[in-house]
Length: 254
Image 1: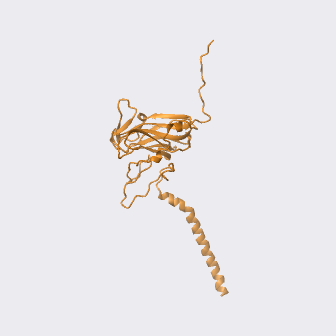
Image 2: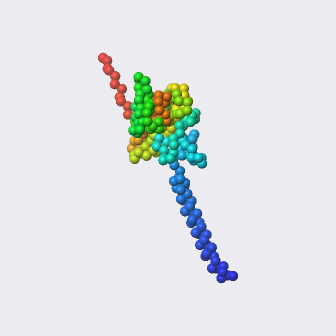
């Protein structure tokens, strides 16, 4: 009996060590395997929606909403985003104005399509708003954002004209890395069909760093025609503490 015990002990010990090692390797590789199974085009930036990633469709493979300004993967259709009141964020402009000390306004007419499969025109005689009038309603329009280095962005607001009861447009404040990949985005969707309106992102904090990132406002109409127009954006930010101001020059009197 002792002989069999002595021979069996090393075998049992070896098996235990092997199981422990395999379990450790599986735990170490688990998160990486899970991440590769997800389609996550950028970091989570909208806590009201959870992770900004493709959500599983049903067995019939129905179209699902694509939450990024990036083109969707092959086989994924774009759905118009539903009305999301939670994305309205701060509805009172004065509440923002009292908190942050600087703003950047960009007219809708400054946006241009980043693709050639759409035609666009200015809205009305003034031309401050634009809309897609032919081609793909899912083509993305954009404009670069120029803010002071070190500025802290807290809100972005989209001004729009929407008279389509079934379709909403989407916009994003997008952060790109130096090789054009999306690092982060904050989304806004038009809502309703009452004409002129605006929507504001939920509050976030991002410090402008042109050494590492580029910044763009993206807009996808999801519709063709004057019933879906982009009229402009307003970025609310806090000036950097190192901002340099021009000296105040006054005319002396004697």
